Image 1 (cartoon, one colour):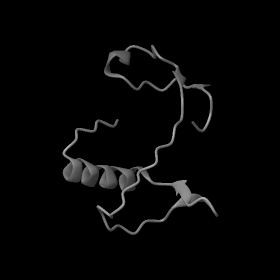
Image 2 (tube, helix red, strand yellow):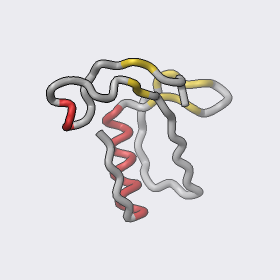
Image 3 (cartoon, helix red, strand yellow):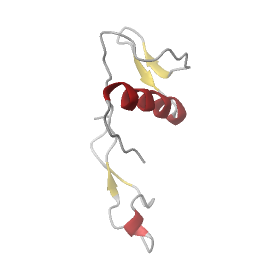
Image 4 (cartoon, helix red, strand yellow):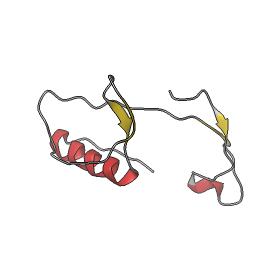
Length: 80
């Protein structure tokens, strides 16, 4: 987890049409590892941490990678 928690008044869920019901949010990170590549995609990584091989992806790059994960492993992924 990147941070513990924070207050965010941005509605996220469909039931929050008339106001934020769940203002406390968390940030988290995921690591995808596969012994063989399942996609070839060149991207610009923001916030790269040298020596750890970690960085931040844009939302469009993440969505493209997750679509390939869904196809390869036949899993259902729901992201907002």
